[in-house]
Amino acid sequence: MSRQPLRLAVLEAQRVLTDAGVACPRVDAELLAAHVLGVPRGRLPMVPLVDPSVVEALRMLVSRRAERVPLQHLTGTAAMGAIDVAVGPGVFIPRPETEVLLAWGLAAVRGVARPLVVDLCTGSGALALALAHARPDAQVHAVERDAVALSWARRNADTRAEAGDTPVALYAGDIADPGLLGALDGMAHLVLCNPPYVPVGVPVAPEVALHDPPAAVFAGHDGLAVIPDVVRTGTRLLREGGSIAIEHDDSHAVAVPALLAARRVLTDVADHVDLAGRPRFATAQRTTLPVSPESSPRLGR
Ligand SMILES: C[S@@+](CC[C@H](N)C(=O)[O-])C[C@H]1O[C@@H](n2cnc3c(N)ncnc32)[C@H](O)[C@@H]1O
Picture (cartoon, rainbow, N blue to C red):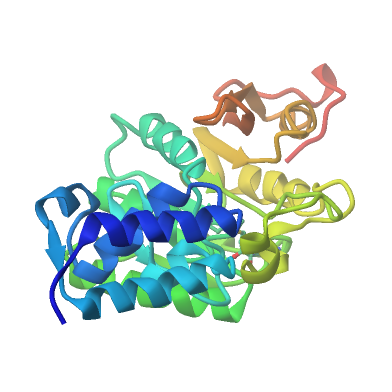
């Protein structure tokens, strides 16, 4: 059979994805075409004609995407910072909104030599590995409770180490464990966390409902079942002057800063918006000032 215009195949893919209710049908059609061709999306205009086998491969991927299989499960990767991580069934797909948290964390340790960084709830390892890539002098530790997610993180950590990044230390553990990473108590310059935080019952897209692990997304009726443990453990790990950043649901712009502010050793509590302008993560610093137990009714460590 003769070669066919790629433009028409992408237009047809866009039509199918639009009918299926996919959020960004044109973008996904182009990204799937780029994946099939093995080229960056920006190079598609330089590929006017393609073999029928390419059109067929695209058609098959598009039909799976139309069933609301996540784009990243079809391409096998998701981006975070300057790296891609492998993702698939059993692990949370890193989201673009978490890029802002990563950027904040990198800014927080700018100027700190050999920072010690902890990523609580690491999932695929995306945050920890992106940070280690951007800061080769950092000592990065990452914790995950779920065995399948941890296996994705290990695979990604091996890939990044083989590519030359400073290896990240991965731990199987529950961030609610009061003894977690005890050897690092009071040593972290930065604690990052993108925990589960969606209130149970909040409707989510089929891609999330059917393909993200529920324990990675939902956290009790108010979405706050995990974050108090993040605050407790993160505060314990921080050194004086160290920073913590916790991603949260857009309904938590008051609740999560309040959890941080309730710790008397934390100061400079602030909330931040994501790329879409929605409240997305809260930050604080461990104070360098002496804390007097009498001077404050707030919680200790
Ligand atoms: C929203 S995902 C975030 C993954 C990754 N940080 C990212 O941004 O892509 C939350 C992760 O936390 C893990 N998790 C949930 N509760 C946990 C707990 N108590 N201790 C450790 N990990 C937990 C889940 O298994 C999931 O992988």
